[in-house]
Image (cartoon, rainbow, N blue to C red):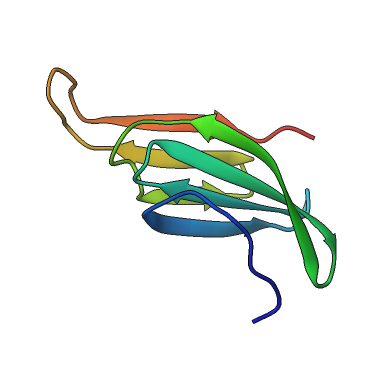
Length: 88
């Protein structure tokens, strides 16, 4: 273990973006955590972005600079794919 820090709950997807030196973490609590790599052993939470409750499954495609998050069907809401574009 290199470090430990507060994160989103119910994590199902965790991806490293080498181009931007960030980690993207999707959680079933309806949030996406974005962590910036400060050096080899230090990361900092830079943003918590709302997604959808239960949406923990995700896929990061670095060639497209996109994070895809699967939002399951819930009461009053149909299942959908949420698409997030990474920012510099």
